[in-house]
Length: 240
Image 1 (cartoon, one colour):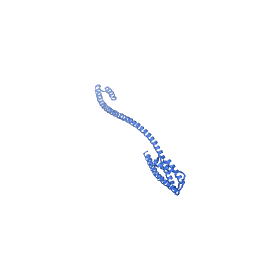
Image 2 (image 1 turned 45 degrees about the horizontal axis):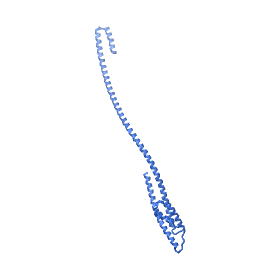
Image 3 (image 1 turned 135 degrees about the vertical axis):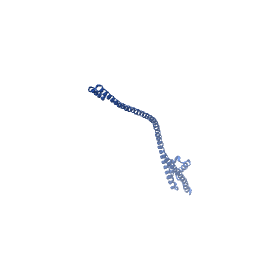
Image 4 (image 1 turned 60 degrees about the vertical axis):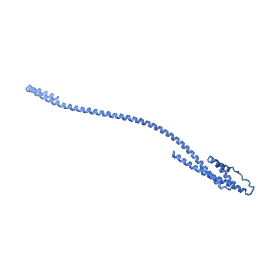
């Protein structure tokens, strides 16, 4: 537009200095050429702008479509994660319940183990005391086989104490044999005829030997029970 204005001014000046019509014609020709050139340039510029605008719109539309697709994918992932979270929360609740049950079971198992340990220790102490008492009674009986006075009283006392320890562990026949030994008269009998004392000593020795064999049998029995009790406690500890 600035060029056009300049040409108009030149046209006015030419009209003043030359033949009016010739100069006007020349000026008009120049204006036409200039207008055509500028029009073509503007058309090229517009075409470029239009092309840029169309490409920009397409690029923007493509970006918007991609962003929408990305948003949809994210929404789908979020929904999937929410479902997974819900499933995991349910599993956590179940695991909490299982842990609580296991804790309760562990507490009950500990109580059972403590009770079993206490019973084992009591049983072990009882068996050990009984075996020890049997061994002591056996030694006394062996050392006093011919002593029907003091030796008998010592042996009788030991066997009597042993009966209290044995209790239900021995059979009724075994307890009866021990009780019969304890029930013998405490006082020394009067020996009226020759050989009566020897018979008495032999009778006592026979009874002592019978009791000694019985005590050996009981000692082996209780030792086996002690071994079995120790093995059972070891197994219980390993199982716990």
